[in-house]
Image (cartoon, rainbow, N blue to C red):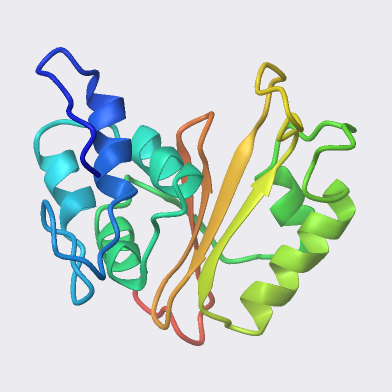
Length: 173
């Protein structure tokens, strides 16, 4: 990482450079093997939550530590208590028939439902049209984040958040 940047470098380029830094080498800007406060710090200075989430996803920089920060700082979310495939389909308003999508919409909804039911932890990204080699094609990106205590589904393009709850675990919500 010896490439020099100047003060006119766009903030996006700077963030990508920080996110691509190997945390095994050293900590940088609140990112280390033990914690990741960079997402929080960027929110604190006024960066948009959804733009950051998309950037972290695209840079493959979502760590278990940054997930905790993402969940803690999720914008106002619509509460979803019915996570049937039909309700999940409602949360995905646009899905292309492109061969570059993650899967068919029916398959994606089934997978979402299974992951939520099985209470697996992880971050899962779904693209309606990743565009193959060209990034000009319109793509809707959806992100499912499952932790031990929280379940969120984000529609990046529409800047919408859904908190998936069930009465058994999420009383009082």
